[in-house]
Image (cartoon, rainbow, N blue to C red; front, side):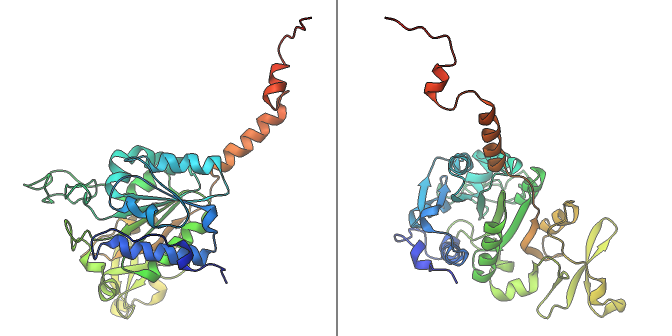
Length: 334
C-alpha cells in the first residue's frame, strides 16, 4: 500500500471551463501518482503553453510551466540533471506537435526516461479555436472557415516513426483506464507517450463522442492487454483477426470463428508493424484502441549519459578545477 493519497498531490483550484477534459485527467493523474507511490518531492511536472499546460499549477510537486513547445526540452534537462526525479511532461496537441514537434520526436528518439502526456482535443483552445495539427481534414474552425485542406498528424504514427518504445492511449473521462495507462508509463524505463483523448467543450465539443462515455467505449473501443486476445464489444462478441497484411473485425460464432482464431496482443514485440496498425484503427469500421499498445525495453539516454560521464571521468588525470589547473605548465613566482 502506498503511503500517499491523491490529496497529497493536489494544489490550488483548477481554472478550466466546466466540463473540460483537463478536469477529468487531472483527477486521474493525482490518483495514479498516489498509487504509484512516488514521493511528491521526487516528482516534476513540466508543461508548455495552452489550456492543458496550466496543469502544473495544480500539482503539489516540483512544477514548471515553460514556453510554447519547449516542455520536452525542459523535461529532458530536468531528467538528465537529476535522474532520480520522476518527470511528467504535459502538452496539448498544439504545444506538443506543432511548435514543439521537433522536441517531441527527438525526446522519443533519444528514449529519455520521461512520461509524455499528450492531451489531444484536436483544437487550439487557449487561443480561441484555431485548427491544430490533429484536426481532421475539412475541419471548420476560426482559422479554417472553409475547412482545412490538410491531413492531420496521428500521434501514434509520429511516436512510432521516431522509434518510440512506449505508446498508450486513454480517454479523459475514463478514470480507471487512464489510471492504468499512467501507471504503466511510470513503470516503463524510457520515453513513454500517453495520448489522452479529450473534449474542448467550447471549441470542439463532441470530437470523441463515440468513446467518451462508458457505453460508447463498450461498443466502439477495444482495451488492449498484453498476452490477452483482442476482443471487444458489449459482450466481447467481436474480435480482431489478420487478413493479408491488415486487420479485420470478426464476430465470434460466425463462420466457425472461435476465440482461438483471435489475435493475441503483444505489447512487447520489437517489430511494431501490428502495434501501429492497432494504434491507427478508427471507426466506424474498427474500434479505437485503448490501453498500452507498445511497451518495449531499450537503453535510455539519461542512463547512457551518466555511464559515459563516469567512464570518461575515470580516465581523466583531473577531477576538479584545481587539478585541471595543475595539469598545465606551472611557475612559482618568489
